[in-house]
Image (cartoon, rainbow, N blue to C red; front, side, top):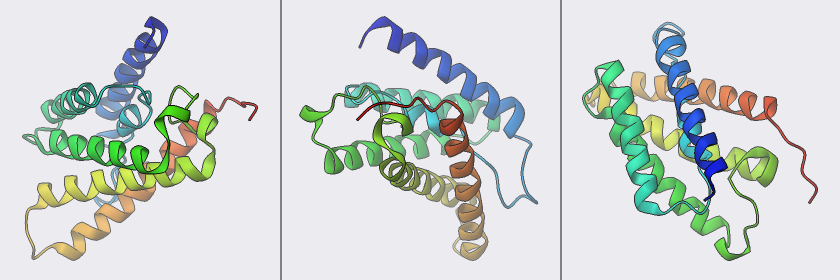
Length: 171
């Protein structure tokens, strides 16, 4: 990775965590839907990032959010699971040797691939997050509804951000 990619990802990390902590933390729909747009940082990390570094970044990002949300490791766990799903999905769906694109973004990979990728990562992240947060089987319906609505809200925001910063590439 060159220095430009590192600087862009550091800036992206700060901006997304700032938006999550100071804008989206108190934004919700009747405590049913909470957007977690910070996962976009983990989704947009370059393809060539070593797995151990990805896990460390996921853990650090989740731990930072846990410090502000007072959730004691719930976000860190969900981010590490998201990193595992990201690695698995990319290894199954793409040939790493044939990848010329620097990152898994909407502008490089196309809408269909990116939407499926984001959906699988976000739904896994939200399921882990909300089930660890609730930690009760008696509230499974409420937790699944909260997870589903938050997933839709998060995916809409992620796709909106991706469309705002969409770069047309020639294929």
